[in-house]
Image (cartoon, rainbow, N blue to C red; front, side, top):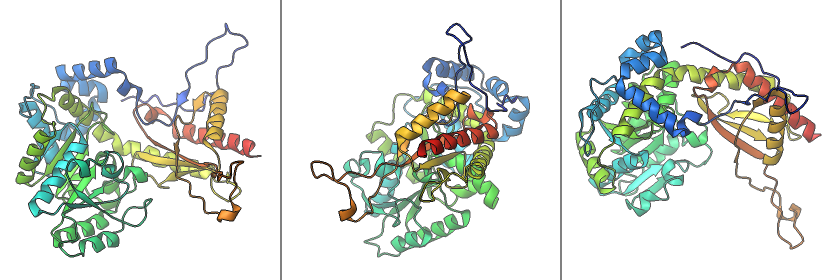
Length: 449
């Protein structure tokens, strides 16, 4: 593909009166979802073009050279038919392709990852008549599924790890596994990488140790691989291991197709265990996931996989370059407590997705500084902020009270944003990001004084 990267931080268009040339649209740096994903007409037209001619679409979109470079990993169907309650040549071909790529023998397409993971976990638990499952407090099952594990599947969860802000250590997981058979879980779920923690992940050696410990304890190990595609380049770079090598350490793996790959929506559960897939098909039916057809979702998920999977390493490199450049260029900007105005979490991103944390300023102050940067430069450094939980560590006697005697909470001066490099932002030069973050820090420094 040809590069149209923005080389410099542009000045905003100025006008002496209302009849002058209108302002150009601001360059948005920090994004989580491309505009295309929320434009139904454009998205459906894109899927239609792929459906009519998958190979032609990919050659046109990727370029001939990139297409040939990635051909061995691409899933190009001989025909696209309409599946019927889970059966269909095209759907089966896609499932088998992903299974081979991830080193598993079986795969089953699900409409959501929620269904896929819980189906696997309840199947493991049924086998042992043990309904305990272990996961970290940051798990999607804990925070985003309205306690489906408990209300629908009657599972009991054992929390892994002591810190809500860090991955459970290998020793903490081993401690859970060392418990008596009646007290340890039937299965353990770990998220690779952990989205809530900024995509922190384990080293390959740590995963090997966890996997071996689970097998010795006869506890199944399941991978929440919602962003496994994104983290694959990390394991290749740091350990020389393929995505199949990572998956080999798990009894089952879930992957998503709508997050980093931009598909319409869908997931797969993968395993070498034939009985597990048969058991999860039953749970898929019980929970309404065995729908009449998944034609559109399957086609567009295949398109997203073919189009984006091979380009995630370059996006990770860009995110790492941005983080390094921003850290160096903004190092002098610190709060009165010595905290950096801006930092990445993790400091060295593991993939094309990360958290950026702002300290020392309220959300209103940050938004106002952002708007001033956009007005002056034509670049919008970020869109949305999220709040971090604030714990008041002051002694009770030092805390302020209002006229009614109620404690005045601490100002919320730690914000963060979750973002990733996507098709629009990967066309922007790293220096543009760095300059925008520096400009933001300069505005914050002025407001602080």
